[in-house]
Length: 317
Image (cartoon, rainbow, N blue to C red; front, side, top):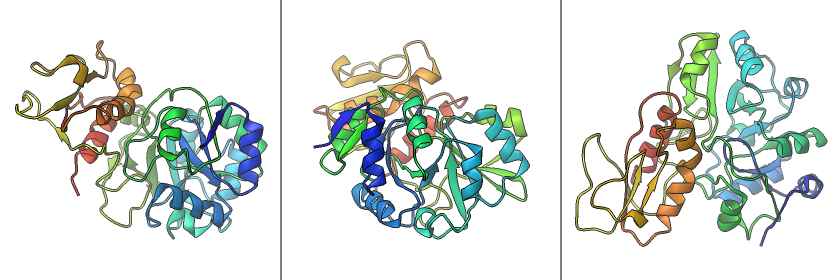
């Protein structure tokens, strides 16, 4: 089983040897490997059972290093990076040949970001290479927001998990790309659309792809518990007759035992709800229930991204 700890020197040694490790970020925990080492990248795909056509995000710690991996940074991308990095924003930029095609699924652009977590930033500063780091969970399952979540899911396949406490944001980064300096959001996430548009103006949103996605996290079915999840239309109630689990925004559903319910934010705080989303889904998935009902959140701030996750978690293959 994986060792959990806070010693970045141990994580560094494993990474330099070509292994993968669990790392904390402000969004979710990542499964990290040397992004410039195809064997390490293949290990990430193998451990996650992730399809090789789904690209990975590359993590670094500075603009100076970023320029080693990308050919250009459009003006609007630079504005966003200058404003929000380190933070839960990923930029899709033209890659240099240094980045293996395996990382980008053969696409000409690479998804890059600077994460806002002190342990991982220190680790990245100490390395001579960037880290490819998708979420540290089996492909398609609920993303991990604590080191223990990683250990529970992948602990027999990774040697070390850097424990940085619970993720502060709780949902993956927002991914934005640029064509002729026009901005497109490819994945809703921890950076709200309103924040982005306040800096660069209106953006388009294109978040779903059934195959050959242009950016990480675009597949239509993703982030799903093992139990069937039903996203309820506003104002409806769950059907009786089954052992029901429920995920509510601020007030519990009537008629469902309180032990089988999780409330995202009793005060209606969307940031608190985002921090709790994946942990509460995971808890419900481990309860003796047959089905999980989830309530949509307000379509504002991080509510857009959480509703996106719930919609994709409810897709049944």
